[in-house]
Length: 305
Ligand code: HEM
Figure 1: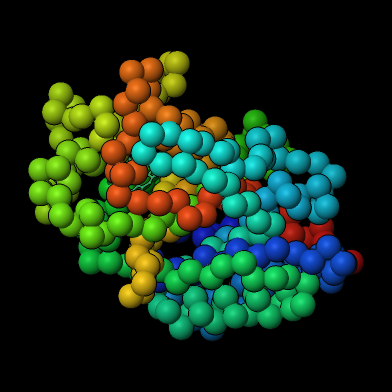
Figure 2 (figure 1 turned 180 degrees about the vertical axis):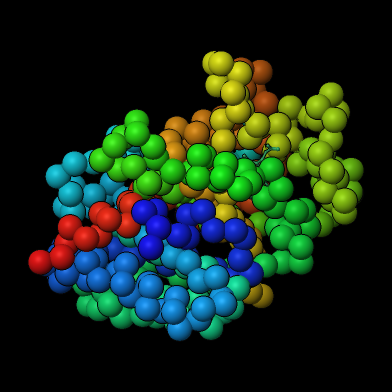
């Protein structure tokens, strides 16, 4: 078992399920007992599907954290409310999130069912969203998503808390947003407008030369540097979802610091000093916006009686 929850770092999968839950405060004792059993349950189901690359990550928001632990991850906070010219983000924080992923739908289905059953009557389901791999890892707007993600060992360096918060080493700050796309509006745009919106080409997924990128391009607004000129990074694990009524992206990202995601989001929504915001936000609506902390695997052991 890794010291970090394996779903944080895992390579892209073909299937994912995001479940958000609230905990009934009258059932806290029962809920805490189930937390102690999570690492073993995940290992058991993984063993049933040895080739499925089944992974889980389970996280908690600031709304419930103090009821579970007498210390707190240094940067744990609720999702920020933001209102910009293109889009308004209204936080929809909940207590708990399950991020389940695999290369087989039956494997992620089995683990999701088992975890939900483990919590029994101590939780209330808020939302369950099934996600799928679309073509060669494309968002439903038709552009490849995840290309500039950190690779190899760099994934851990970007996503996992280190010695700066020793009590929560190997944990990760997690943000989840359900973006519901206006695909009718998007599909009416010509190819050049779509490509300019991302700052990348569509078919070949090539990055525009820096000089050709609009300050309103999504990749321009999210490519940030710190005071020392070092790239500010997150590890994205987003996947499309959809049915005949609603289609979009479950944006999901992990970071060793909560501030990296927050800075990017502000750059997209509020824009820079000249008022350049992210024009991708003209084609989508944030239906949910939640912040969590995914604790290290050892954290669950403290609930063992
Ligand atoms: C890049 C899609 C929201 C952060 C990209 C790319 C696509 C994409 C297609 C280009 C390829 C790549 O992954 O490198 C979307 C869609 C979104 C969305 C459809 C929602 C409607 C967000 C949000 C954030 C974010 C909310 C963070 C707050 C990034 C970052 C990059 C990126 C950091 C890489 C930029 C670079 O270094 O070039 N996104 N994204 N995205 N996105 Fe998003």
